[in-house]
Each structure stands twice: as structure tokens, then as C-alpha cells.
Amino acid sequence: MIIQNLIEDTNGTAPVLAEHGLSFLVTAGGHRYLLDTGASDKTWDNAGTLGVSVTDVDAVVLSHGHYDHTGGMLGLAKMGYAGPVYLRDNAALPYYNLREYEKYIGIDLKILELPGLRLTPREGITKADETLSLFSGVSGTRFAPEGNRTLYEKKDGQFIKDAFEHEMYAVITEGTKSVLVSGCAHKGIVNILERYRELYGSNPDAVVSGFHMMNADGYDEAAVSRIQEVAKELAATGVMFYTGHCTGIPAYELMKPVLKEKLVYLHAGDRVEL
Image (cartoon, rainbow, N blue to C red):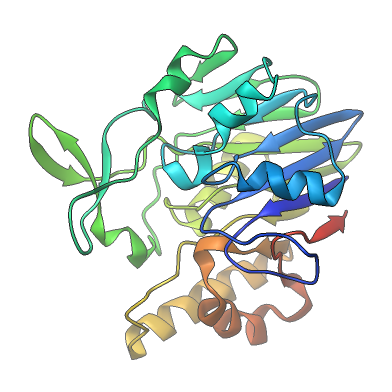
């Protein structure tokens, strides 16, 4: 299984663009999938630089209804992709960030007009094929990311806290190996893993996900302790974790001494084989 980071917030060693957003190209079981499309067509500029094709993938999975994970979708369609696009059935609601001002962070609604759009339900497992399955329905609330505090849904002219029921997770299986891929883990990575175990019966071999721990205002003592507690919970699973994007470098550096070799940061252009 090969996971190629097409774009995220930081540069690695590859000569590619960095941008706030996330997109992975995953090759497994004779299939190729795009998991999120980044914030813009810079994602496809990077794909060209890296020499990978993207219009012939078997499916696109959009992990949740935020622009930085879906913004490249229409550009991909214009380039010729007309295959399946998986999205939660409530991911097109009006989502906002109220941190500094009223900023719309939802998807471009033209995505709903794509012929390959396939809306997924909250409950159960959606099987795309023998390699890719999707799930939602995370109900746990432990260690919910503090970065969620400024994120809202607008309903009937009023702002209500986003419960992130529009978040969806991909599971890619190749042989006996299973990898869980999440975009931002707004529901909390500990809770997402709990839901995975509930549905699939064990932990995955690896997790690829942002942890939504980024905080432009820095971390007080309580926040540092919370991040380290999450790291301890993850370390106890024995799972390999690959992260980036909304985790942020400072939070990654707080988690790394706990998780050691079990935590790797994937920069824009980085590639890993599992």
C-alpha cells in the first residue's frame, strides 16, 4: 500500500507547493483513491510535479464538509474525472469559523451537481469495493479537539456548535493490512478509533489523519497536558500513526516523545509505503 501526500500545510523535501488543506493519493489492492482534494487546484499542480495521475482514480472520498478538504474537487472534475465521489449526506450544510469573523468554510455547492456523487449515511459501513469502505457515526466525546471551539453550523439564521456529523472515515484493506484514513478527526481520534473497533472488531494497522490540535494562540498548561494524554492513549494501541495538516507542528512535537517511532509527520509531497 502506497500513501502519497499531495498537499498539506508544510513542505518536506519534495519541490511542491504547501497550502492549508489535505489530500492523499492511496494505491492499494489494485485500486487508486483520492482521499480529500485539498483547498484548491494547487493539489493537482503538485500531482503533476510528483508525476502521478489523478483523473483515473477509482474513487474520491471527501472526509467532511470543509473547503480545505474539498476545494480541489471541481478542478479535478474539469480535468476529466467523472467517477464516484463519496460525501456524507449532510456535508453540504453551511459551516462557519467564527474565530476572527464570520467566515464560510463549507463546500462549493456545485459539488452536489457532480454525476458521480454518492451520499453516505451515518450508520453502518458503506462498501465502495473490496478494498475501500467508509463509516461515520462516532458518538464518543473524549478528548474532543479544542480547535473545534470556533466552528459552527448556521441554521435558520442562528449559529449552533458544529457536531461534525458530516465527518466520514475511510478504511483501506489490502490482504491482512487495514489502514484508517481521516481528514481532521474533528470527532477526536480516540473516539474515531473506538468506533472503528466497534465496526471492524480490532484496531487498524495504521492511521493517517490530522488531529485538529493546531492553535494559533498557543497552548496553555492544560492544553499541553491534554495533547500528551491523547498521545498516551494512542501509544497504548500499538498502531502506527501518520499525521499532518491540522495537527500542527507544535502539537506533533508534544506527541512525538510519547509515541516515538509510532508517529510520523507527512509533509506535502511525502510518500510512505505500508
